[in-house]
Image (cartoon, rainbow, N blue to C red; front, side, top):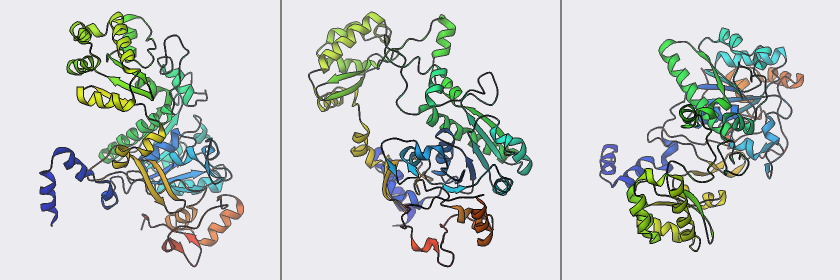
Length: 459
């Protein structure tokens, strides 16, 4: 069957089948990468800085991660519970897939010269050190833009590159605290609550990736690169929906409401016999369905109008009825009833639930694959899903300096002897303990014994 006939047959399918065929996860690697040809140099650490290039790498950008010799990125040893060998912790794996890993001592003149050579061939540079650090090293925007005026350079920090808070150190919890997110999270009578994951890091990196794409688009039109200042805390401030306007109009602070949504009523987490379920019924037909399921037609008759449901005293009556109705049912019973009556309900899933869930596995949201170095692994898949140029995970994070040979010899054109001299002087480094030799034989240069993956190389 030719391609046009196949496309015609797909377009005649029912909608969900049409989208399933178009997005087929099994065909991801046969489709082009939209950011292929974009080279990113990263000198990031922990999560905020490294995650931005990972988002770009998953859609085809060539990312070269530069770490200091020795322990490398601090995140390599920070994550609790489990590690892949001594140089790869779980948190590092989660935010560093599909990159090339090299190690340079950036505090030495020779190390700076290597960085300058990389920057001349780069489109983007990402850093998230304390404000002013890379400038002090001679690797700030004002130095590197002289070397490469087309460079898009992004500095990521807790509070931005200027302002009263600039000198403060920041971690995800600090960003949540100063943004107002923590104050708005949790139950009314309890202390403010930190969101369970590193939302400041991951959301900040996502907005940073968007900013880089805007910078690249501007460069395409103007021929000029530019500098981007991204604040981790400021990103979370931007994420605080209607909070600022509410304060402006009422003069009141936004109160914590626990698991309830003050705008979408009812929307809450209920305890059932075998776990917890999220229930929401905002539209009138959804609320009617919930009331029918609870055999509480009186609630629908009185509170069908959303403005009536949003009144505090009416909310209490609705939620009391919903919790009482749900407590003697199971998760599966609630989900089945919701499907029958047309309101939203879903089990509060654990990570293990997600890992085993049919829906997330079918969509390849749980990305299970064979890594060329570490063997069988599972990670969170790239999102969003694109039909013609989808994202992909090519490999997981690698040991410190694993790709030195590819970058310095094949990309920068150095000789093997020059490379050995850099190792001898400690200008570059590599972690060599406990690294399995499972890479495809064709990727190893038999004469030198060095690793040369099949990737883009400048002519």
